[in-house]
Structure formats: C-alpha cells, structure tokens
Amino acid sequence: MKEMPSVIDSEVFLAFSTYATIVVLKMMLMSPMTGYFRLTRKAFANQEDTSLASSTEDKKKMVRVDPDVERVRRCHQNDLENIIPFVVIGLLYTLTGPDLSTALLHFRVFVVSRLFHTVAYVLPLRQPSRAVAFLTGLVTTSSMAYRVLITALYL
Amino acid sequence: MKEMPSVIDSEVFLAFSTYATIVVLKMMLMSPMTGYFRLTRKAFANQEDTSLASSTEDKKKMVRVDPDVERVRRCHQNDLENIIPFVVIGLLYTLTGPDLSTALLHFRVFVVSRLFHTVAYVLPLRQPSRAVAFLTGLVTTSSMAYRVLITALYL
Amino acid sequence: MKEMPSVIDSEVFLAFSTYATIVVLKMMLMSPMTGYFRLTRKAFANQEDTSLASSTEDKKKMVRVDPDVERVRRCHQNDLENIIPFVVIGLLYTLTGPDLSTALLHFRVFVVSRLFHTVAYVLPLRQPSRAVAFLTGLVTTSSMAYRVLITALYL
Image (cartoon, rainbow over all chains, first blue to last red; front, side, top):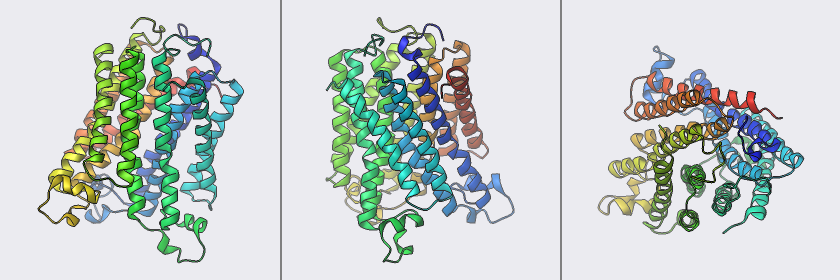
C-alpha cells in the first residue's frame, strides 16, 4: 500500500478497516438468511417470487407474512440502525488519531456485541440477552462519537 | 491531530466530522425513543420482550402494533433513508475541497432540517411542515452530489 | 483539487466518488417515487398527510396500505441493505490501492446491477431477473471485501 497518507496506513486504520468489513459482511449475510427462511417457510413478499420456489402449491397463499421471516428481518433492520452509525462514527474516530489499544477495544467490543445480538435475536435467547447486546453496541458507538466531538468540534 | 494529511486536518473536514456526528447521534436516539414508546404503550415486536416489561398482563396481547410506536419507527426509517446519503455524499463533497462558508451552509441547513423533521414527525406538526423539512434535506444532499459529480466525474 | 493526499487524488478514488454518488442518488430517488405512488394511489402512512393530497374524499380511508407503494418501499429497503455496504466496503477497497481497471469493473458491475434491480423490482420483470441483479451486487461487494481483508487484516 505505497503512496498512502500516514493516517490511512496507520495500525488504527487497518484495524478499523478489518472490523468494519467483518461487521458489514455479517449484516449482508442477513439477506441470504432471509431468503433461506422465505424458501423453507414458503412465505414471500412478491407474487413473482413464488415461481422460484414451487409450482405445485397455491401461489396466492405463498405471498404471506411468516413470524420466522419477520424475526430475521427485524434483526437485519436493527443491524442497519446500529452498524451503519458505527461505521460512520468509527471512521471519523479513527481519523482523530486515538491510541491503538483504546481503538481496538472499541472495535472488538462493538463487533462481538453485534455477533451476539444476532444469535440472541434469531434463536432467540431469553431477554435481557438481546437488550444487553444492543446497549453495549450503542454505548461503544456513543463513546467514539464523544471523542470525535471533543477532538474535532467545529460548529 | 499530528500526522494528518492536510485535507483531513482542514476546517471543512472538522466541520463535516462535527455535523455528521451530531446528525448520526440524533438518528441513534430514535432507538431508545422506540424502546420508550414500546414500554409505555406495552406494544412489543417479540414474545420474549414482554417479560422485560411486565409479568402481570396477558403477554400474548403485548405483541402488537401501536400507532405511536409505528410513528417513531417511520421517523427512524426516514432518517436512515436521508441521513446516510448525507454522510456518504457529504464526505465525498468535503474531499472536493469546497469553500468553508459554502460547506458550513450545506451542513447546517441539512442538520437543522433533520432536527425539525423529527419534531414535525413525532409530535406531529401540521403538514407541510414535515414535507418541507424532508425536501430541504433532499435538496441539500443533492446540491453536494452535484458538486462531487462536476468536480470528480470519472466514469 | 490541490492539497489532496495522493490516494484521494487517484483515479480509483475519483471513480469511486463518481459511482458511489450515482448509486446513492438512485437510492435517494426512491423517496420521491414512494411519494408519487402515495399521491396517485391515495395511500398514506400518516393521518396528517391526507390533507396534502385531497380534501374531498374520506380522509380516514386514505391511511392505508397499497401494494404498489409497498413494492417501491421494499425496493428502497433492499437498496439500503445493499448500496450502503457497497459504499462502505468500496471506500475501504479504494484505499487498498487496487488496479484502476479492476476497480472500475467492480464499480460498474455493481451500479449497473442495482439500476437493473430497481427496474426488475418496480415493473416487475419475471424472476429470476431481480434475484440475478441482487446476487450480482452481493458478489461484487463481497469480492471487494475479500481484497480489503487480505490486504489490510489487523485483528
């Protein structure tokens, strides 16, 4: 990676790239998981999708809402609402030049909290498992946002 | 913030960091707000969430759709659909090296329009309050996208 | 664009800026398209929105779910779930310093696949048109994520 400016070549930036990519890939996996549940539960959102799955059953009945599909979709939506803010604020946080160990702590806690959140949502685990996972991620992102604002405030 | 490349250390970038962080934090606040409405309206999306809230009422009845909860969720969804494009295009716009005063105008108008949008959606205010707030944000982001395309077009 | 660090001034970065802006603008267009279908189908999500559209019909009946509106909204949601990951991973991929021709191939395939996805969803076209468009985008983003992880892995 020659020709990189120093900040982008820093260890903190490499760590951010790695953890952001992992957690975004995890979020992207929710789409195939939704597809899997739609196929196995025979529950589709569009009339034209029913021909992909089957041609024997009543196709009209297959455009329906299924509780397992909706659970995966709520998990995906929660990822969008939490992982995207982490990526945006995490990038700005990385550019403030934090200590490597502090930055790694934030990135690791966030990614582990979201992996656990997915398991807790899809199985599901007893509450407050999912609530704790969600709040851990929220606090981690807020902590990075706090550093961005105290380091770079310019209103 | 030593070792920063000049563009990242610029006042425009500091301003972008500040306003992007503020508006993403505002978006993140919609999650706890949804939680607050779910608890007070006793309207949950998952069976396992009802034990967090209460053990006396009929738990089956608490997995239901509530109009106040749905209103906050629609506001959150509209944030995702508008604030994320602002952050992406705002970052690329910042890297095109705009005038500080022009950039600040874009960032401030967008952030104020989204704060007003949330107030107009949640209360709710009479239309066209929310429509004007929404369109103001859309035009601001589009104006930044226009500059990105005329400055950096490479197809 | 003087004072830019070399990576941000590179042709790969200019190409990323261009394609990311185009595909995010396409995503933003889904909001006005939803508004158009809501107005023509007289199907709104909020009571206060019905006064914008009409004062003659029964306003209560206009807060309803319409299949055409829901189709556009599902397309918009699919954009959020796929275009945002492309932008995040595409930016990190750009910073790994890929060949210009390889990068352009990724960006072009992704943007074309999403334009075709929208057409296939809204008309709608027969399956597997939309499924192929969706999977093409997913594979393109995954290919960029693979390069980010093998170039910059730092756990």
